[in-house]
Image 1: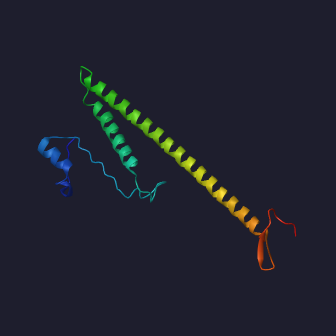
Image 2: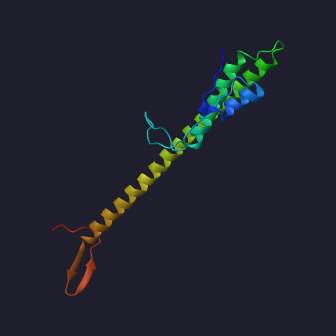
Image 3: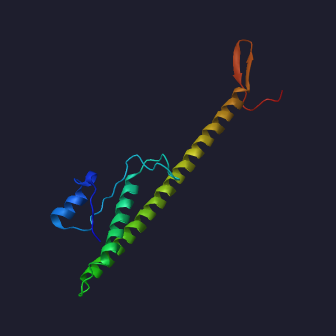
Length: 150
């Protein structure tokens, strides 16, 4: 097939790579720092981990795509591809473990914070109960050692 470049694309890197260097497969990865415009993550900004994941997926796709065209008889290329795939899987597993660890730490911190709030509320109730035991009489304030029945 014959590649035709639109006039508006004449100065793009892909067209220049094709015309000047004969590179037939040039790809562009574009991502907004603002996040997705639709879908379940609409209005959520991309994180560094999201962008790294996109890059890993893009490299994996390129590796798989190019493996069809760049196979070598001695198998060195296939060995490289296999090492790359193992590395990607290890990084994804490590990222998943890190995410689980982070989630666990957040949950633990929330539980500790909830306990602190509950303790503070318990102390406030005790203080209020104790304040209810204060008797005013004859210009002198006395604190009863226990709640008084009225």
